[in-house]
Length: 110
Length: 119
Image (tube, rainbow over all chains, first blue to last red):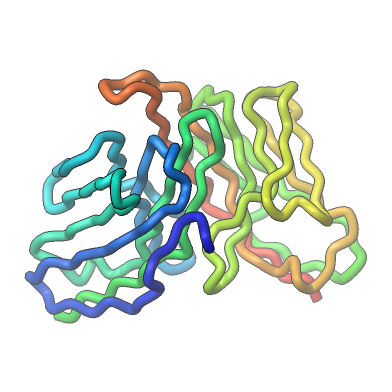
């Protein structure tokens, strides 16, 4: 079992819709959770981090964490074509290295 | 200027050659990382360093070595390059520990990447 699992996609949503990206992790002691966006050929950039159960909102982005279910998600409201990218979920145990999922490719259709 | 820089940005080399990829940062972070990225495999950790005197192997360190010359510099070497080392390589730094409301928090900052082709 992979430590961090994501559906590779592509996930296609129409412009203006809500995109929902999901991630599960295997290490129950994980403390920190991240979502990175990566455009093709570019480096990953952090868009959201979450450390506590519940929701965290930042503009059009909402991260949701459920430690009991070992599940973290990212919602993108009012999706735009510029949101088309690969989204990487990453998990850290605090003092340990960060582990990345393989990413979900999102396509926002105009 | 970019906070995390990598040189070269692109490199073509031949099997058996030794090459070095360099990473520099101006963020003042102690932690630095080298990853490689392959299609369908995501980011995989090669080596990481929590400070100048602390270097650790990641999940795929075979065939690679590193040097942490200073807090700001972390180099990755391929001792004898082979075609399956063809990949996109990223250097990253981390601001851990950053103490926030949830305790220890961390953000990784990535360099622009080096695209390596081994023929």
